[in-house]
Image (tube, rainbow, N blue to C red):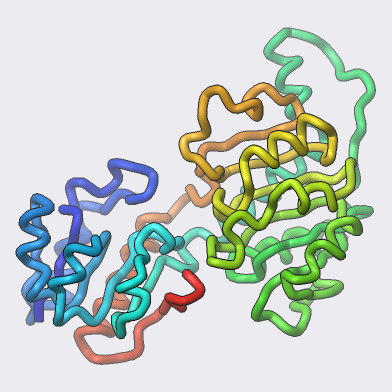
Length: 326
């Protein structure tokens, strides 16, 4: 059995889409798959040369490499989102893809809560006044979470963690998810995404915790933002591709919504000339919502457990629906 890790472990952590690989990870993997050959190519050419032998692939896989990987049975994504990994040939194949689900769901939920409370307390405006050494904040419009209704789009691991946090503040919760039929504990109502236009006028905050899928990419455009209330907040920690950046900028500039907490963007890094940077009702974080304690330890556990299952021919965990991208 041959397992390929590509890019080479020393290259992991060099960009936002390839989290760092702890130094001891490779040693642990070799111990778990002691009877297998583990190859760590140094270059693209070496990875391409190793692909025909690969039965398992950990990391990134290009169409060219996949085209010659005739023995391939399993690909482990280094991240939760797999939209950057997928391509038509891989989707249509029998190769199983697993992701890093449950890696940072609690951290992301905490991030949403922090953004939400900051918007409720008008902290973006206060921070700007602090930088100017100005005391107080005139005409504050503070909000009480207990009197608000929040729509959570995406009731996966992140959404469920977020429900627990909002429920503790007595916030009314509406869930939107294509697969969840019954309201989880603490949720007033659960609806199919087709009902979004109907639900948006009813809520005080929209929190996007959904993955990028063929159905969600570009979903929030100008027409969708116009359905929201002018006093509503918009929070996105899911995927930037779900929201049209130009539509979001216009919605905030023209007052279609009251404010936004944004961790992900259609274009990343967010362009320096984006109007969002200067808006006093916007909080911008640089795709850091999933950062938190124990992240790398959890990543190692996910990969190593799936590796153990693969070499012992047991069912893999965190299997992705390739057609749905999650």
